[in-house]
Length: 311
Image (tube, rainbow, N blue to C red; front, side, top):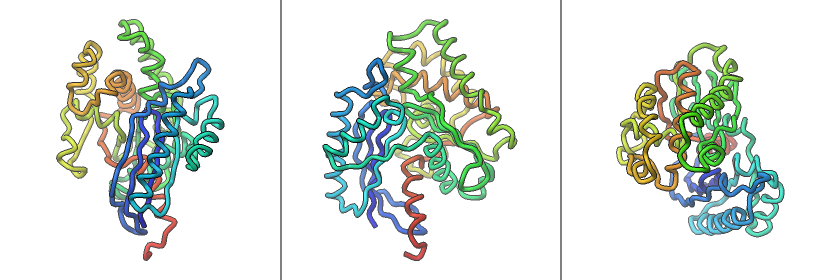
């Protein structure tokens, strides 16, 4: 079957069209995405602004047309932390469905972590042993770990790169004291429940997914997308730590010139790097392997598990 997965993230709206069959890896057939930046379309009360809702509705309507044009039999549509945490979340969902006919499901933070973990497990397989999985999105950081397909522990923290940028860097480049406060806040938030993962001992494989980690790995020398999804990619803790002081003094143009950095996300590089550095330090990791599959693939895989393996 041809399946569409509509992912409304804090940074980007992304429709991924795949050819899916039980027992087979999903085969990407088409992709359509737009930089919605919902995490930055919030008013003082934490509500998604009308401008944000209009942008989301326009994207959802066009994604629906693309899915139909590409022959999708079904479309799974979900939203993550920007909509989940908005004070007008229910109103946003109702307006989008009324205007577009697209019913959005809001994933909990725990479900985000669980489904991302599933995709990483399927990508690396059982030989990877006990996994620790980390995902920095626009609005949240997901953490999960365990030896099986369903993680033993999975949780979400409000440490997304766009969220931190909006809250801490709204007035431009912060001074040294401001960065120290942000660093302390990030580390306290992660350390609070770190024991959930640490009690099981060191993971056999520590993995990172999604755009922020991929960009940081590229900055540190990982292969680009032109080398294909099977090329090994790693984010080394030591190299990232050396890069952070350099990143903090770069302007927009210099950041945008770095490999793997989108011009629209330059303001998220430093907060994302501070979160990634904290993750590796607090969990005692020398580096993180980058997995090309993440939340969208987890949603697809869970849907495929409902199909017959022989179908």
